[in-house]
Image 1: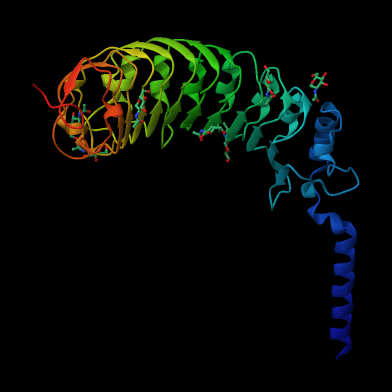
Image 2: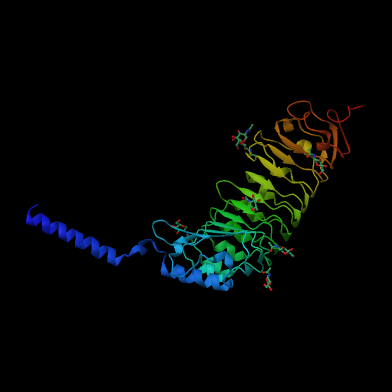
Length: 331
Ligand SMILES: *[C@@H]1O[C@H](CO)[C@@H](O)[C@H](O)[C@H]1NC(C)=O
Ligand SMILES: *[C@@H]1O[C@H](CO)[C@@H](O)[C@H](O)[C@H]1NC(C)=O
Ligand SMILES: *[C@@H]1O[C@H](CO)[C@@H](O)[C@H](O)[C@H]1NC(C)=O
Ligand SMILES: *[C@@H]1O[C@H](CO)[C@@H](O)[C@H](O)[C@H]1NC(C)=O
Ligand SMILES: *[C@@H]1O[C@H](CO)[C@@H](O)[C@H](O)[C@H]1NC(C)=O
Ligand SMILES: *[C@@H]1O[C@H](CO)[C@@H](O)[C@H](O)[C@H]1NC(C)=O
Ligand SMILES: *[C@@H]1O[C@H](CO)[C@@H](O)[C@H](O)[C@H]1NC(C)=O
């Protein structure tokens, strides 16, 4: 090896050494500001056993219940699942500026409201809080989370109405607010949701009034309004041009003539039982795979064709005067 080459090699080794001193093994360490926030969260939750791995002497990207971005090493995801944690949702979570996913499910002893500090999470895409006994309203400040695509607050004890602000979130498509104690009308603004796939799940609440007329123009993928106190005409959720595959409007007080409704072949699940729906069953319903129209006020012969005769009689029973297979033949 020539002296020049030897010198070059030596310089290279020195450079590598210098680099490794500048960035010790902690080149993968999470950001010190995130670490400080995580420790505040742990302390707000009274240092629970569930967060035993949150040891200040270790790389916080290796801690349980969170995930860091592989390149930036910033915390992007927090998930407390089936956790024994006491208190409220720590407001310090809002100080993790790069958080994209917040997933709290079956946290055994949480309660209280959704903290306002979440509005600081400009990158939050996914917000799921289920079985956490959240109370208070669905805060209208959630509308400030402009990056949100998925909002699931089902299985809590939320009260009050559905805020209009949700419709101002540009790409929000999945909205699950089922199994709460929500009241009031379904806001017409929900028709402005713009996500690529629209899922609107509002079942098991106390929503009342008529459906907004604006829903006639919305092509939901899945719409579940069951077990509320909704009234009036629900036929506007159907449509020849809609690609909806799942509609559940059962156990409400809807009252409309089903015979005039138009259907698209993509509709696979259709549950309408326990309403005040009248008229006959349209032939176009023969392409539905799962059906229930029981406990309504329908009349006339069940059209012959498709799957309509393969359902058991409980799909049709307790109507005013439906007849034909699988019910008794018409007189
Ligand atoms: C639940 O939280 C309350 C206070 O928020 C506390 O008094 C109680 O001990 C907690 N229960 C359990 C099982 O941790
Ligand atoms: C929610 O509160 C009820 C009492 O109202 C309690 O029985 C239940 O265990 C709580 N659930 C959770 C997940 O904290
Ligand atoms: C949403 O996130 C993207 C990056 O994923 C970012 O460029 C954009 O500014 C964010 N939107 C808002 C309103 O902060
Ligand atoms: C919302 O969460 C509940 C409970 O975990 C789940 O059953 C439901 O499928 C979720 N909704 C959506 C749209 O993912
Ligand atoms: C359904 O689609 C057809 C053709 O694309 C269009 O002419 C018609 O106006 C649409 N109907 C509704 C109710 O959107
Ligand atoms: C059913 O809906 C799909 C998607 O909107 C559409 O492409 C199709 O033409 C519709 N079918 C009929 C018969 O209009
Ligand atoms: C249809 O709904 C009725 C009333 O809720 C129920 O008793 C029946 O079992 C259902 N039938 C099917 C096939 O799900």
